[in-house]
Image (cartoon, rainbow, N blue to C red; front, side, top):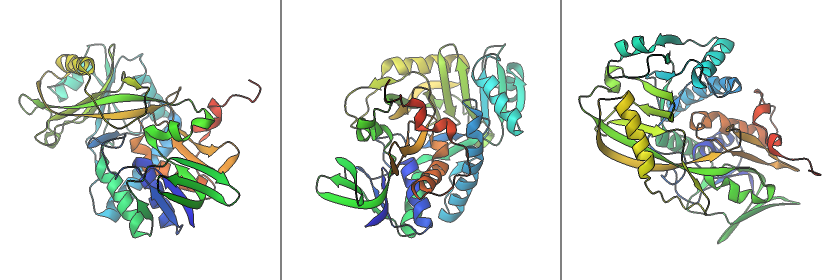
Length: 378
């Protein structure tokens, strides 16, 4: 019997399997596909990583640890995972993003540079934005190579003895007197502890707990530029815009595919069983191209690639990391709400801590499940 089963081996699950195996635990990882794959949330080549977190300052200590863990994984795997391109965050000075970034930066004394829109355009001539917008440059930010991160965690987990079983869809799990039992169509697995890191499939596996998760289908696009104005090699950074039409983010050109762009807001709610099959949405593409025309005018309309992915959302758009009510032997990480990949290395480490009763070094109170659970008589 294993010490811990990790159910779902994407961003967080692969990190949890590695953290546990590195500590000498007998680990079994299960996934219905073969990660890294393009059916969930941890794919699409790149994800932004940043420290001056506008969403909630409580994330900053987690990010500081994440930067250390990504560097450690790079060294251990001999794979480049992090590209320190810098990040421009752009929007109204009284909006959500700019004030939030300033709060986090001030509280944790993080290095940022404040610019006017005019100053930002002078430095990056292919950029545009409303005159009254503010701009913050975070030089320590950049992006992660998503699939490479997942693969590195899986490879290192196996090197430390983790057993990873792919193409095994879990049809049910339960806690009994001897531990945890996990069922697939043709196998039963047992362990003392369980970590659930199932991404968009978490709601299905946790349905009896009525955790308020919902899934959004999102879209990623790559476009050629007209003149190579946005090349990473020439110093163009990642970017995140807050506009009247919503939030948009993207990455510099790093190869022939061009500039990558996506809408962080919006998305279609997924009501049926999630099968990982993605379809395009013309309205989403139109919104992205309207944004490009206004703010990144040297991007062409020659789309070179499209991909779909999922956001698993909580009501407050903050993560859930906790043990289940009355089941301390079951840890869950879910509801990363479209901004979680940069944290996956540290969330995997924290999930391993919870699963093995190790004292946490970080305050997770704002990410606890209890904030969504109603009293029994409610």
